[in-house]
Amino acid sequence: GTSGPVHAKGSTNTMASPIAQIIPVFGEDASCRQAAVLLHKDRSVSIVPQDSTGIVMAQLQSTKNGFHTHYVDRELGVLESYQIVTSDTSESGFETQVVGQSSFVGETVLGVSYPQRDEAVQSPSAILGDDSLLLKYLNPHIAVIITTTGPPALTTAQDSSALFKALSSIKGSNKDSVAGKRKPKGASKPGDAATDASAQAVSEDIPNLFVNVVDTVSGRILYRVSHTNAVVDKPVPAVITENWIIYAFMNQKSARTELGVLTLYEGMIDKAGLTAFKTPGQTLSFSSLDSRESKPIVLPKTYTIVKPVTALGVSSTRGGISTRQLLIASGDNRLTAIKRALLEPRRPTGNVKEHEKQEGLYQYTPLVPLISMTSPSYNQTVEGVSSIIAAPAALESSSLMLAYGGPDIFFTRLTPSKGFDMLPESFNRPLLSIVVVGLLVAVFVVRNMSSSKTVKMGWVS
Image 1 (spheres, rainbow, N blue to C red):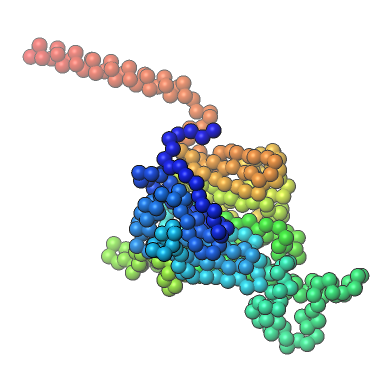
Image 2: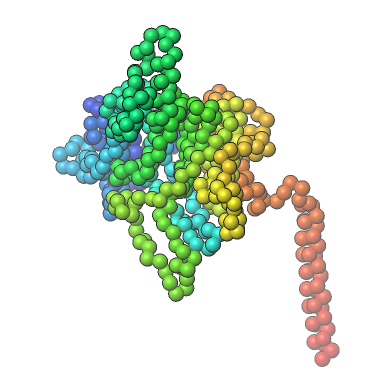
């Protein structure tokens, strides 16, 4: 059972509205060490335990921009951002104010991904081969919302979505096109292959998978990319690390998995823009509510792998110095680690230039090889992995990985940059001990000889 001192005790009243989100608040006062803010679907706020209002009040006063939260309504396809403020009329003493909203009309939310909490970032910029700097867009409040217009929202989206109307107007000039003869799926008679083929041709031309990068404080969509021929009846895993966003989906037309990679940057500093006598005019503060400063520059690229992907993860180290690896759980119940450099969106499509070689870039090839020698699970089969999490270890070179979700749970230690801060197993420890002991004995003997010689010279003189 549970153990430890009891700091608060009580019961909560019956809540009139269902809970939409639970926000933990860490602090310490005379009654409770930790509290939670409950956001209800009717936008009301309640505090548990009820006598821990001081912790929430301290959280409100800790930042000048206030206490922000958000809620994603998967049924309606809406993200709303709120600011929690004090209120004299509310029973809990707090209420919400709507800050922003993003609506995905005619689309169904497949999944929502967030950055890792307390992730260590070794450098806020990327050094290019010509000594210029790319400033990373490091916003802890972003979220990736993956939506689809496929079933069951496809038929509604064709009538109401502005995207479908725009695409229909582009194809409207061709009266003999398939788009003009479109029928709802299932409207044809059994065995009518022509209608099914025309519906399939239409679906190939219309995007059915959307990846939305959203700022959860302002509620604005920072970037949006679409894909066609995506299989949407299965989960689309996504992971966020530093300024990278990686997601995977199955392409129905090519019958292989595609890896979408997005890197977010604030801007660039030329190699002559930062010297001992010149500094760039960069702002030191960041606000999600400033639409001019909070929108990133996105570099996209798409890769392919030959196996379906069920889960994605990324290695995490103590200081963020070691190379990060993308952890992939494939449909054949295997785990694979891929170097993040292989997924760099800035890989050139032509011949690699000299400054690109100095940076370590390879020539772009769409197919990413899955090498069995880099598999963390070795030859073991890990069934039904749906989630991969990683945590830093005490050593910078090590990262701890846990894969779970099915009947199997797999845990191991990774060394993305090899064990540069660890002694190898073949290291001769006894010999090192003998050498250290020998040096200590030699120092002791030489010190005694020097002391004896000094005494003799004193008596002689």
